Image 1 (cartoon, rainbow, N blue to C red):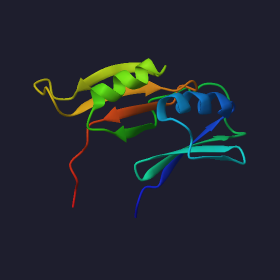
Image 2: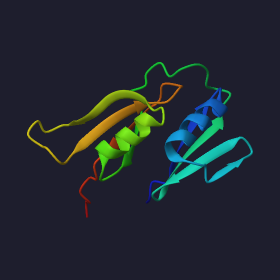
Image 3: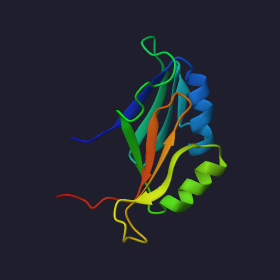
Image 4: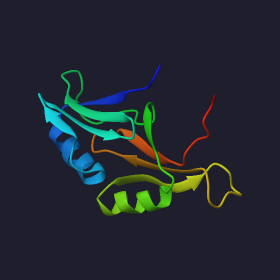
Length: 123
């Protein structure tokens, strides 16, 4: 199997599209109410959803991650582009200085996503 994408439903998909475009650039597609960005081999897609309204009441329930070798640099770039910062880059290992970083953001619907240092491949 291969994980393919995440679909984020919103009562205001235009607002999310504008937000994610500032962070990830022009969408790879926008048609039929759906807008998507390819990040690596996966996709982040926004769509209007009639079962969603308001902000996410439990933003930590589902957190999606974007892997980057430069968490600190990408964090600063996204922050400058208007990203909503939940937590600045940190590491799970108090002694680490250059690896294992995570930074957490929210979108305008209060969905969380993170930048993460690359994880080791599992065979």
